[in-house]
Image 1 (cartoon, rainbow, N blue to C red):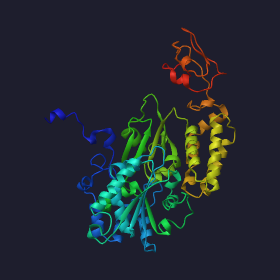
Image 2 (cartoon, rainbow, N blue to C red):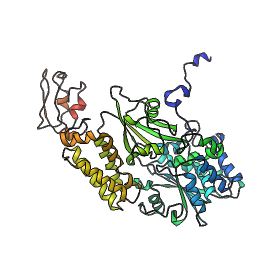
Image 3 (cartoon, rainbow, N blue to C red):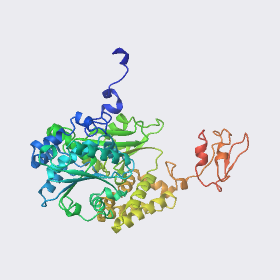
Image 4 (spheres, rainbow, N blue to C red):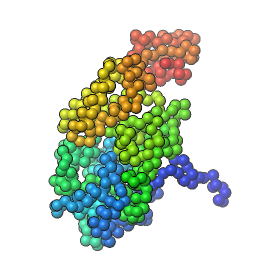
Length: 501
């Protein structure tokens, strides 16, 4: 019988899984998220019971500090230090808030955790509440995540019935409850001060810091804000001790990191890897490299709209906070988009600037006006109106926006521009000086014609053209009238023989 199943590999022998190390995602696919009994069967709430019954607030904070856990929401600030600031803050009422407002294009880490293992996040919040002395918690979750909201509501109800939330949890004398709050749908609400204003029922706009939320946050009370992945790590640290967690990763970036990998790679999905692993291991070994083996990988975009684009020459960069920041990108919440040589890097910068300009709350002038000006200049370049001096203009304005914007959205919005200029400057120069797009993606810079030797005389391009810009007769090579051509790409998409260039 054993021999008949010999062909079924173990996970450790499968390329996608063998280099992963699951901590935050360790329960994915192995329990029913609708069953608190399943979670308890996996040692669920054992860490909360330990923290509430046999540890003081100071001991919990010290354990998190020694573990080296840093916030997984993007900034990478010490979780234990944030808890300590809030615990030491004066005031009888304190709050713990879970930031589940995952707004980066291509990111789905928080969504997966909330849908597959909601109790892990709730347990992390209970432990954090004991550490800082909070009696109320909130999960601020994107309204666009209806399944995650449903799972969270069910998990909170189950935890209350089991006596794991509410008054006198596990007869320890500690009381704490959690409320689920659907977000306002604005990217800026991922910034902690804007999130708090939204949670208060106001328009989500950031405010200057200091004071930081740990001192004066929700309704001007001391508040700790941690993201989903950060809180999901907390129970494992308390249960397995800080020494176990601290042995994972390099000195300044402990533990593991979850990435949502998408783009032109063979294996798309969530991966969790030890900090310090080379970026190439994720892209080539875990995710299988380029999906189209005829095309080579060109760049990896990290950190969402606030991140940067790293060239293939930097794939040996270790995945840790300091190393990624040194490249000009950021770790961010964990979005990772892999691009091949058919991607125009100027167009990529324009895409992300379009997102951040649209999502700017408009409160501060550098972000509101600066991102709009960057976007207009990038549109000029991709539309063939670029001129000498545009690159220097983009660099100078980007630095001004970074230095003078109020919150993290504006301070990081120029990163895609600066990294693409820094690593792919020749593409900008080709757009401006030669009016050419090397990747052949910027349609206004393209002219369409037919390869006579490749044309099969089938007439598919003729039939697809919506403006009658193609002349064709049976058994004749098609000809494109460039004056009539609107560059709609219909002929290019219709031709199965790559005869359109």
